[in-house]
Image (cartoon, rainbow, N blue to C red; front, side, top):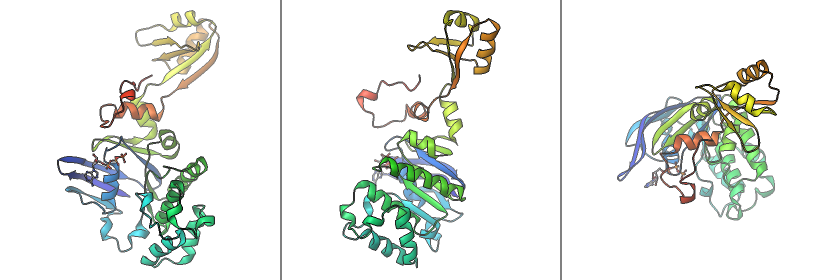
Length: 309
Ligand SMILES: Nc1ncnc2c1ncn2[C@@H]1O[C@H](COP(=O)(O)OP(=O)(O)OP(=O)(O)O)[C@@H](O)[C@H]1O
């Protein structure tokens, strides 16, 4: 479990993390999201004692990171995949870190296999692709079999097989009761991996909730139907609380009525529906809506893109 209380970090005049409080619970994957510069990496660095907060505190399992006797066995962390020593082989790199914690070669072989690095374990890290470095970084994080795992952008540079491997691994680690905190800018991936989300913008928390609640609060769900009697359906369901829009593909999207309510109303007036679906917003839509006012580095082309359908 990770607990942050009024955590604040300033670099000169810049407030990177603005007094945030949150809890990352064991047994689930918590996604850490936010625009570039929102303060995610700074927060992760403070969790593992690489940055000192100006005020507030953050603890892992009731203790500050530095207070743990064998931190590698408490918290596994991947912050920067490029950090591994380029001149060493992957095996030597892992062995050197393992030695600092009395971890034996058997575990080193285990994590090499787990990360799919067998064929390159004796090659120098300097020649590794970004994806291979990510795998090595994840293997390093898991070396001490830690109860808490913190990964900053672990799927960056991974191929589809690697992305799926990370997703399954994170889900399995959480299912074993571990605490998993994960940042990523890939919304579709996060939607498939995380149970909960902490969304930050300009150093502040914008949302801290289950993924379902984040999506349902920040987006609108609609009922989508198809019928040959579009006009009659629209006349039937028209009301002050109901908005029906005919889409370019001929489907009708209705806000303000559930799928069941629409089906019952259509049936009562003899309108035949041949498709009825509840369509909820995507995590990407929810994320864009939540962070719309919090993006510091915005590209011109995207500036006018609305988050709502
Ligand atoms: N060592 C540092 N010195 C000065 N400013 C820093 C330092 N580290 C981070 N910052 C600033 O703090 C803010 C938060 O940065 P941080 O890297 O935590 O954001 P992030 O959410 O991880 O962003 P990204 O998604 O781009 O990785 C940014 O404005 C950044 O420029």
